[in-house]
Image (cartoon, rainbow, N blue to C red; front, side, top):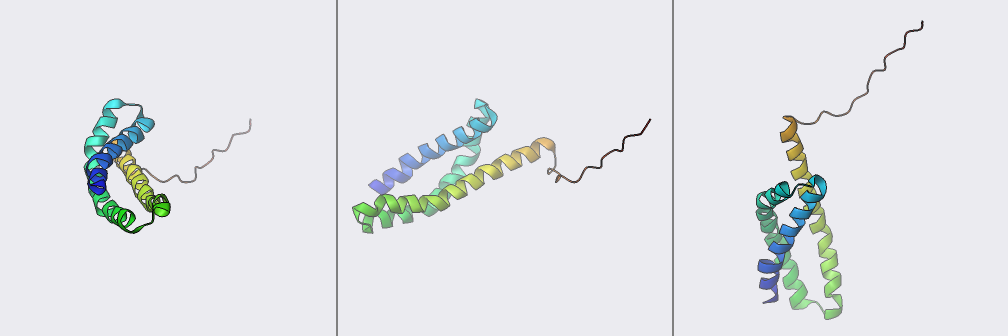
Length: 117
């Protein structure tokens, strides 16, 4: 029951909260934050279901109690990297959509010479 509770109650709520806050912090717009939930949570939840059940089966079923928190902490590192990457990609595509094209890389600017009078 622990695994089912984790995957079907806790994870969807946590991912909704995560996407809402990650978007709200960068935009300060509640409507965009709610839109980010509807656009991104399902993909994150599917990725979550591909990763965390295996970690939890090992953790709940085979790890001694004194190591359970350590296992979750180590398993959280690649998961947090993935979620952070997802947010950055989501922000990148939104910025590209706004401007209509990919952002141009910053090049060297030519300095204008001042005319001596």
